[in-house]
Structures are given as C-alpha cells and as structure tokens.
Image (cartoon, rainbow over all chains, first blue to last red):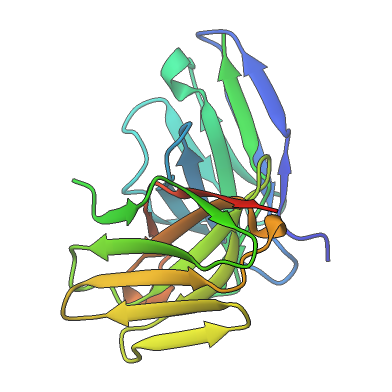
Length: 112
Length: 114
C-alpha cells in the first residue's frame, strides 16, 4: 500500500494559468479531503469529497477553485487563473470513513 | 477567528528533556483532538488523538493531557530526542473527526539539541 499519492510534488505556474493537483487515496479509502498550508501556518480545510460527491466545500474559495473525485481515477483540485496568493502547499488526506486520516506529502504550488 | 490557538511558536529542548506544547480551543462542540507531526517536505502524520471523555492518553513517549473545563489540551514529549525535531500541530474537529473538517493550530517548531 503506497499511502496517499499526490502529484506533482512541485508545480510552477505563471499568473493566469491553470493548476491541476492530483490525489490518489489509499487503497480502500473512499473519503478525500483537501487542505492548504501557507508558509508558517497550519493547514486550512478546503473540501471533503466522497466518490462523485462533494460533501463539504465550506473552506473552498468561491471563485477559481473546484474539486472533483470521479468514480474512476484520482481526486483533482483545480485552480483556474492562478494568482501569487495561491502559492502554498496543498495536502490531500484520505480515510476509510470515520476519522483515521492519512495525509499525502503534498503539492507545492508556486505562482510566478 | 482562530478557533484553535497553539503555543509556543517555537521550542528548543535539550535531549532527554520534556517538550510541552499547549493548545486552547473555543468551540465546545469539538469532540476530537489529534496531534500531528510534520517533517520538512512531508505531510502531517497523526501522532496521538484524544476525545473529551478522558483527561489523559499516553502512547509511548507521547502524552495528551485534556482539560475540558478550561478548553485546553497539551502534548508532552518525554525523553525528547533529536529525531523528534519537527513541527507539531494540534487540531480539533466535531462529529468525532468523521467529517474531515479539522481545524489546525499554527504549529510549534520543536528543536531537540543533542
């Protein structure tokens, strides 16, 4: 079991481009969570998804950000028209249900 | 509004000493309190967690103390080792942690000197 796999590990985008971050949960986990970590800050919850459903997106910015977890394939966090303030580490966690979150190693997004 | 306040921001401890990190929360609906350890370039890893029906939980050298009336909880690392040097985050959530919306503190950077 390879754990929660996130890719890419590092992503550089120019302002105005789109960023796509991928997360493959642990085998047997059907719940996925995305968090954002700014430098010297704790993680901030963004969105909670189950297969084909968004359960809680209370932490997602209203514009430019979207997330999906299709029936097949990884969960995708998509950021359109990136701005410098989007530069952060984005972490995905998965769980089999009640708690037991396992975090991936994150994607470090840099917007230049 | 910062719902989970963590202190200190950084901590230096000698090898063999006790590291103590404190957290305070505001929302009385929180009922799951985990601690995470994060090394540079890695994701957070769950260390230990507690629910409010107990006042203390110990796993190896790591102990959580929980004070429900004061809305505070703390992590104690006994016999601290250089390998414990990392950033530690406390967190809190509702629904026993089943809904994934963990509220994290800002972290404590621990350095254990040999």
